[in-house]
Image 1: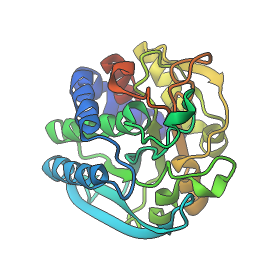
Image 2 (image 1 turned 30 degrees about the vertical axis):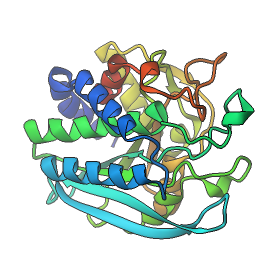
Image 3 (image 1 turned 180 degrees about the vertical axis):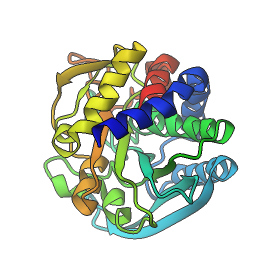
Amino acid sequence: MKLLIVLMFSAIFSQTVLYFNGNNAMNYLEQQCEIGPRYPGSPGHLEAIELYKNHFNKYLNNVVLFEDYVIHPHSLDSIKLTNIFSRFNPDANFRILLMAHYDTREYADKDLDESNYHTPIIGANDGASGVAVLMEIAKFLNDNPFMNIGVDILLTDGEDLGKSGDIDSWALGAKKVANQLPYPRPFSAICIDMIGDKELTLPIEANSYKQAPELVLSIWYLAKELGFDQFKMEMGSSIVDDHYAFYNETGIPSIDIIDFNYPNSKINYWHTIEDTPDKCSSESLESVGTDG
């Protein structure tokens, strides 16, 4: 199985090295941020859904919206989530899932200024960056089709609704949609999140290594071969987000490519009003889009 994974990624991303366009991905990131905050229930959330529908309908097949209602962890009101799913080469049995959350945090509750705690964030890195890479991958797949594998793309909602200290209140969209996805199911899943950081550093996320060690090592070794030193062959912290929820719901090996220290271990823009496009770079998006 390990050899199969290595060969698959080499076949796919040897082509991507030539064509993945970090500038395009950066444009997609900025386009999302121009909408404004995109948390469930906001006007920006509805506008973003239309943007994604139009984009993935243009480049992929079978775009499906999965709509579910959940209890908002903060208000205890019912809130609608919309997960967005599309397929490349839908008839292929051998498939991989790429996913990223598109919703943004409704509260800047990590901001140094307490008066900003109830201000919704723009989510340039935490939200837009992963989706931007998937938008460019969809374009790449359309422009450079191959028939040996199917690729599913899932944009999850409600990842960032959670309450601090309540582990079950995060990744709500992934939990809802995990067992609604059509067959054939993917053999593994890759989640990308917070990968636009100008100071991008990508250690191995600990839960990923527990859930899918062969897939992790295949991607990190491939990054080394391609010269992307953002991928560090060292163990990072355990992060509970969509990849963790998806694995728990389905048993499908799932990993996370994420830089949780945004921008570094001394300064924090995560869940603050500073999470804006100027803190992101096309080079970081390109390194992940090419390798992951």
